[in-house]
Length: 448
Image (cartoon, rainbow, N blue to C red; front, side, top):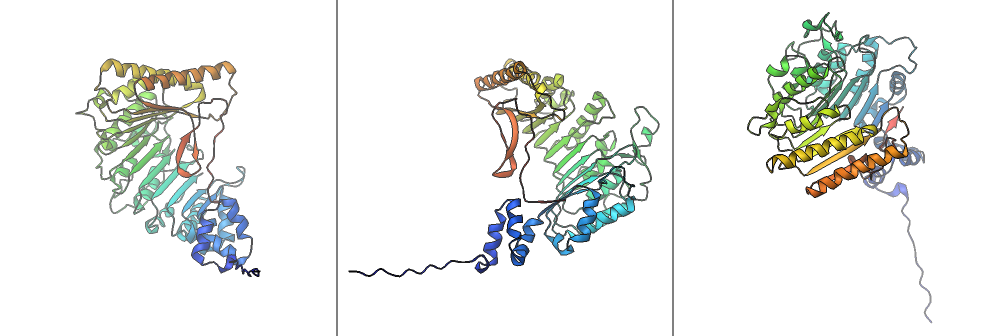
C-alpha cells in the first residue's frame, strides 16, 4: 500500500508580486476596478496612482480649483490626457477674472509634465500669460480648444490660440471651435454686415520668433509639425489662407462652416483652404459644399492624395451629389456620410444618384472607389420615429447597399459606436433606427 504523498501549495500574495507585475495587472483594469483596488491599502493605492491619474477631466472651474487644492502636485506628473473647463459651476456666480482663471490653468499645466493630449473648454477670455507653460510641455501633441461661452461677450481671440499652438514644440493635432477673429487682423469686418464678433485688447500678446506679430489663423499652416487640423464654427475669411507660407504637411483636414456667414461664403473659404494645403491631405471632412470644378480634374486638383472623404451632418444634403462629383479628380477610396436620422432617406437617395452618375460617366470616374458608408448620428432633440418612418429609412439603406453590392463596393449603413476592444476605432451597429442614444467609451479616467 502506497502512502499518500504530502502536497505543499504556495500562494503568492499581491504584495509579493514584483512592481512590474502589479502595474501590468492594474493597466488592464477598468476605471471602477482600479478605484476599488486602490482602496485595499496604502501600498496598493500608491501603485494605482499612475493609472488613476492618467486621464483627468475637470468639468468646471470649481473642480479645477479643488484639484489644485487637494491633490498632491506630484500626481500631476502622471497625467497624459487632461480635459479642462473654465466655466463656473453656477452660471449665476460672480465671474472669474481672466487673470485668476489663467493662473489656475497655468498651475495645472506646469505640473503636468507628461501631458500628451489637452482639451481646453473655455468660458470667458484667458489672459495672455496662459501661453507660458506650452513651450515646456515636450510630450504634448494633441490640443483641442473651444469657446463654450458667449462669443459676443467673451471672445476667445485667434491671436491667443495661434500663440498657444505655435508655442507647442511637437504639436501634431489641433482642433479649434468658435475661435474669434481679432480686430487687429480683420479691420475690414468692423461695423460691416453680417456683424461678425471681433476680439479686441489682444494687441499685447507677444510676438513669436517664427511668426512675429502675424498671429492670425492662417499662420497655423506655418507650424511644421502639424498633421491634423480641425476648425469649426469659426470665421475663415482671412486672405492669408491664400498667401501664407505652408510649412506643414497636413494629412487630415476638417473645415466646418461659420454660422455668421452664408453658404456661398463658407464654400469659398473651404475651397481656398483646400487649395492651400491639399497637396498632402489624405483625409478630408466637409461641412460646406465644393463648387469649383478645378477639384474634378486629376491633373489640376490640389487634392492629389485624398483617399478618404467625410461629409458631416450639417452639410447641405442637396449639395452632396455635386460636391462629390466635383472632387472626382482625387483618388478617393472611401466616402463616409454622417447624418441625422431624419436625413437618412435623403442621404441614401443622394448617394444612389451619385452612383448612377458614376455608372453613366464610365470607368475613369471614381475608379478607385471601394466603400460608401452612412453613419447615423443622434440629434440633441430626439423625437421618437413612427413605424412608417423607420421602415422607410431601412428600405432606403437597403436600396443603397444593394446598389453598392451590384457595383462591387462595400457599404455599411448604421450607427457608429465605440469599439470596446480599441478606443481609437469605431464599429457600426446593424441597421436600426429605433435607438438614437449616443454611446460613450469607457476609459480609465478621473472626473471631477
